[in-house]
Length: 69
Image 1 (cartoon, rainbow, N blue to C red):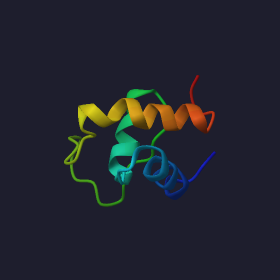
Image 2: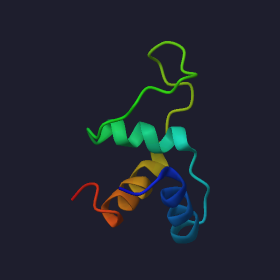
Image 3: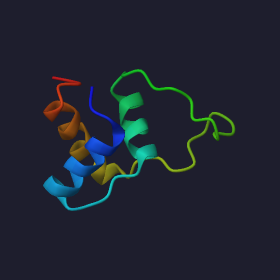
């Protein structure tokens, strides 16, 4: 599986924006992929959820790397 840095680089090249790692983790959670809890996370609520307009682009990244179909 690709690293977060590889996913961020691919998204930057393909779509022209820098994806935060917390956005990638949020979309992984939405897609039902396993996500580890961040060491610095407080509570169950996400402080920086992925913006709705970027979710589909991050899903496309997951398809590119074979994480989802």
